[in-house]
Image: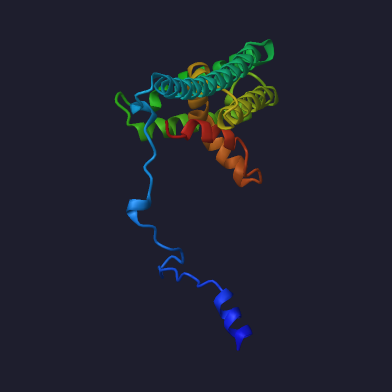
Length: 220
């Protein structure tokens, strides 16, 4: 009896915790200790520490923003550099000769068929006219230059415009600089030879000049 009583007396009475929906006991609001605001501290040293820490955070944020800005500037400068490299390539003799061959052939065909367009043609009529000129330019009777030589010049231009388009599409070149130098030419080129490209795709080259088409027809 004495041992049982002693064992019972020796045990601590456990405190029953209040039941909550979260599984943790509720803490009365009066037991929560409000953290002091260092900016309202009467001690000037604590006030100085608070404002110093705040200023340091501002400086760190501004430094991070400036680093991101510098990074973006460096990327854009690299894009411009790549685009200007393409401009230099465009000015090389082989591409200049290809442009001259194209211009001479199209000029002769436009002069030959000048009467096909009325005084105020619609955009649809102009598009059909350009397509007809482009298709004829790819035939042996399309100009004084042998069609094999013209096709070589044509393929060189397609190669360059594809390269330009991939560079812009991949965000490796500056679109603004590329558009300033090449967009008008690329748009005119596609206007004349889009029909010929469609024929080549039907004949088994489904991706022929697809990059040029994407570049010209992309929404801007």
